[in-house]
Length: 344
Image (cartoon, helix red, strand yellow):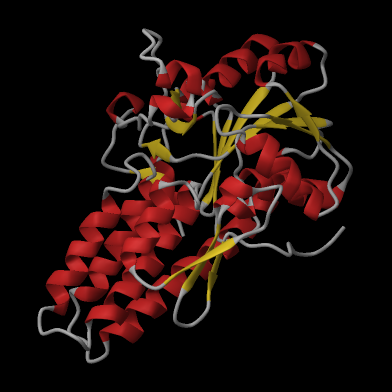
């Protein structure tokens, strides 16, 4: 098995941010290069970059590009950078890593420094490198839990393409596969097909065999006994352990409970929203119905409409384990994730 991917979602060049346009995978590997925060914001909104950790990292580099652009050109650079931060904060409302990363940038701006551009860039690069290190650590912690598993099912893409590198859910699967063969199944993940276009492609880059299934085949697959664990990432985790993730995760959790399959959520603690007590308080992003409706319904003034939530919330009671870089919470329904708040 290869040790590293040949493709990364984000590449900092020293003066620009290169973003892999994930909408074109697996047919084409295309990087778009950005020189300012406006471009990075567009990359996030249009889902060129996606996945909560990767969104946060991209936003951090967006601020670095903003201060690089404005610092030497205007006496009002701080107001312009703050405006770019506000713009980036509106790009994706559910991914809490976005706001966490921007708060890190704001904290640097609040310090009495002589070289703000260098400090901001150093912070962005640290967010990126820390995420990769956290993913590797979570991979080992999760692999310990999967020691006896023969088959796992994952949903959407929570791999290197959705993070700084290595991945959250796929990081666990990578680490588990290094120890022993494990059967990996991936749901196609409609309507953007992140599982079909990204997850199985990404695993193939590392030489890890996987089997793609239609989303609607998950229940029958579980009934067959092929699955021991469902392993997914997260876009936001409430203090009680309720977890927002790609639409379809909740239904997988319900199916898993019915069939005696365990459910694992893998995410860095930057994904935990300590101020959100439970999942009902999580804002669920609604995207355009045009992403779901066939063109004929859109053009012909059809009475057909589409409901297109991007995420759903899985109650903590359906989750067997939450794996973070600070440790593992088993059966979070009884305790939430408060034990991780001050963990090192």
